[in-house]
Image (cartoon, one colour):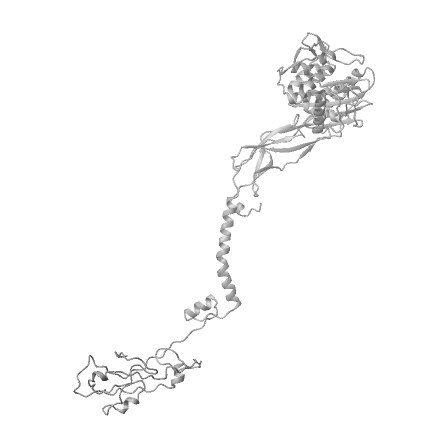
Length: 554
């Protein structure tokens, strides 16, 4: 590079210069890439700053392919002393660029060789490599080759990978199991679920006609006779009328209840007609009867006009009330019963002795009604006295309802209470279809015989003692806490009868102290005369442990 301002010519930089003088050595041409300028005479004045051309060292080659062209590197010759530059004339102050190779000669393409001598530091161009497994790459980086694959190493590698994940899942599962809501504890019976009284089956003295059924309320059926088919029941139908009215308008013991105004139709129907219909003929339109008085009117003098008045008062119309009667019969399981009127005067109102006893078992649970039906006589608001057609009241203490028509014959739904070894039990019976005149007396007589015989058959037996383990509380996860009786259990029954035992659980907690009441043992098949004994925890009730929570499956 020089300071010459002369234009460039092809193949060289700067301008042409005169032929070298005799002071230059021929050795300058033996080293490629060197150049010297002719020196002017010694006495020439110096121009600006002398330009000296030194022997240029070969630049380092950055591509291995250069050696293909150059072959073996030439031995580096020792630099020779350069002649002392002479000042040149101003007109001759020029420089010349001598190219090592022609500039327009195409550069040779690089060739790949197995081993290429390098000039200067080694530099290579790397091609992208395929991805390597992490362990191989790690071994390569640490200069440690990966171990050779084997089944054992494969298993060990998988164990290292999966063990933390499995442990994490186990911990999450354990936390979830321990946090789940506990199942509700239940009460289970371990004692025998029944007890059979000694002796053969009881045979009651039934009449020779009609049909009948006898239950001990809440305990079971003592006996029956006749085919249980639908037959006309007469005024016994008023028992269902009273039951629905008292369900819709409950009446407490000794209470008079709501006031009911007598309408014109009730007054009109009050007189005895050609059919000899029973009515309350002392009422006039505008009179007021209490609910208790109206119930007494249909259950003792069997007043048909008041039964229809109650139906209109309760449901708005007798038709709507009759629908209620039939719906209630279905609810009670009275499969052979159909009501077509509220009084029972129509022969199409039919039932069976079994069905009427099902209704009677519900009626004896209503104290206000039993107060009325146990009366031997009733005095209406006008002061007139009416006698109860149920002659059994002096023997039974309670009675329910009679019903007699020429088509239905004599029918009676009755009940009686008796104490058996301190336990009060209620006997409920029905006898239908007694046509021997006088029918009302006949049905009362045959019912009395059967009822007194049933009461004589009643007896008690101690079947469990206080402190006996009769069951356990199940916590739902396999834990069982025993429960015991708080007193002796005495069952009431009769010869050959099998009494049922069952549990009724309270709201059992997850934890409780020993002695806490958790339920009731019931001896019998229902309410009424069934014996009920509280049961308590024998020991403390505790929550399930962590292991039980962890292993639960539901």
